[in-house]
Image 1 (cartoon, one colour):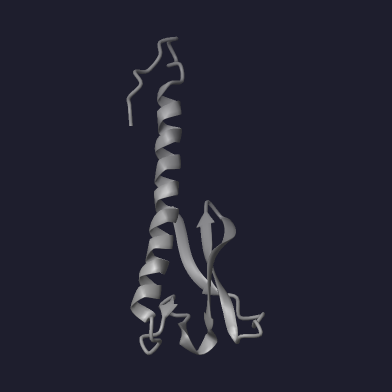
Image 2 (cartoon, rainbow, N blue to C red; image 1 turned 180 degrees about the vertical axis):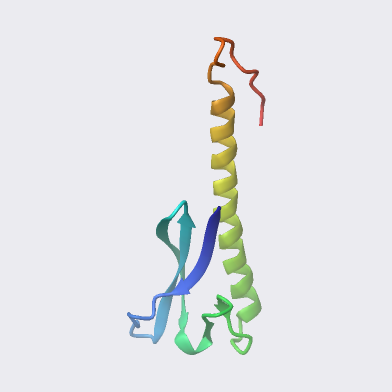
Length: 104
């Protein structure tokens, strides 16, 4: 099962006072960090809920964008898994017969 968390890179603050956000994706024990091309001031970030705090002027829009990032990552994961299952179905059966393939 994969996990996706949105994190803030708080160890580096830009000159405008913002910190970069990134998606931390964990699949089968391997963790990957992906940029979400968004930065925000640390006072507006809620680390526990992994979202922009409500008192930010654009909180609703930014949080929808972050949810879309998560959804896109899960969509890629789902397509990858379906593709893997498709190829497994094409492998020869033990008795030398091929399993029937299916279209996705």
